[in-house]
Image (cartoon, rainbow, N blue to C red; front, side, top):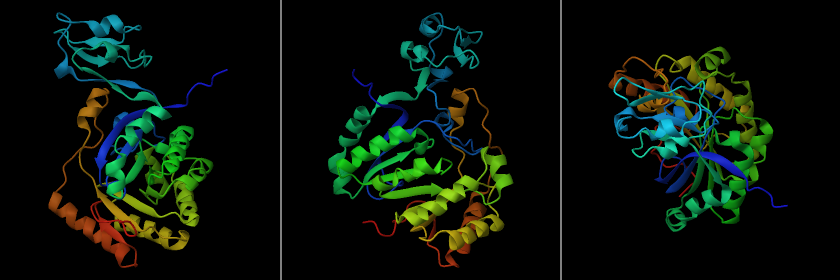
Length: 322
């Protein structure tokens, strides 16, 4: 009996990326994440299911079309008084995405596509010459790439067989065994530590941080190089106390320190995506950008004063990589 090909849900493949690992890279974004961070700019990455996004400004209306209504088996298409598709009744939607397939104007978008490992590798290998010439590789991100553990492992094995440099970007809120099985096939890990306080972490991300910090300590013992990323979110985790707590964890628990610690600036992104999913944008208020930049530099110094290689942003070369 023929075995069904292994598949995963991919919500984006981006070519020519330069900020998520060394060199020029192809980045594969796998759908689904156990965290639901309030500041997430990619809400379409969170659900493990394919889901429709609605862009009402592209709809040509019931008078001229109506294809989505005809295609939907559950009557989940909601229209406004002008006959334009304005939303999806999420409670009744069965995620078949027939509406998006039928839409001629891209007013309905499929967030996520089911792909085989062969199909993903075909996309990756299309850029192989440029990847290798630049000292780049392939980065697997999300969502949470490790949440689709079997599919990710298959892709990592195939990349290793093709001698492609591999990077996994992870929030580390995953079972240790899923992380451990990727180590032989991963050349670099990019990982997040958001908050050292478990109560605040749960309030802002929906999950405790104990497993995350345990996995970070495990990674430091594998010998694989790591880059730590700390997203700095005003009013959430941008205190000196929090950064000092993460610093102390690194010094105390990480046998092999990160080769770089990147402080990521919060920017209000993804509002249109939230609207397409019928979800309110969770981050409100404005930030004085100049003051915020100065504050980030003061947080960076908490790390550098302890001898740790911290930088603001992702543009600085990662030590140890050409």
